[in-house]
Image (cartoon, rainbow, N blue to C red; front, side):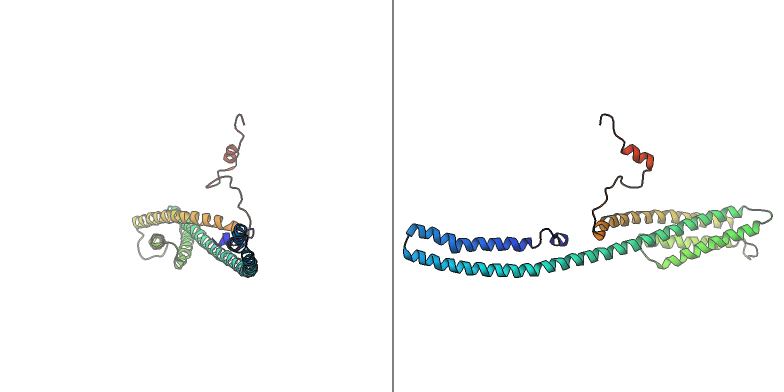
Length: 263
């Protein structure tokens, strides 16, 4: 509604219609009506009444024009202010969506780093011989660092209750897996529980998959909203969309737009 009122091609359309209606009423009551009655009676009194009505109609017409101009000058700035307010609100919403998308992208990167380092740690546990302990320590350091960065991201709450519980579930089980595999390092007092590590790692992976898919779903919604807002924010028409969803690749795209037989 605000966008329609702010359309520069048709400013004050409601005011214009109202003025035309007033003018039509005044013309009929003050001029056309008296002329019609005077043509039937043809008495001097009727013509004198017509002259008075015509003068009154002219005064009313002038007053209507003045009032219409004043109303128009009042409405047009208001429409511009409302259009600017809508544009600012859209821009603020656009920036919030972009910030949310950036935070979700950061969380996806953290998930990818943690899952990759869990696999590296699993591989390092099978090392033996010279340099095995150093390899385990290096793998653990990488895992502990990525898990620490993931734990810091706990303070960035986002999404509904399900999304928040998924985040907590993945972070808690990642930290549990780190604590389990810590006992595999040289110099630890507790014996390493391989079964406990495998179970904790598997649970962390399950949480990672669920949270990653939830973030992808959230990102798809945000991307759609950004795509819808961007033309209005940048004041340009939307680009024609050559495909929907993920990019199909150059070969598939060429096949989609290749000329058909008989065309």
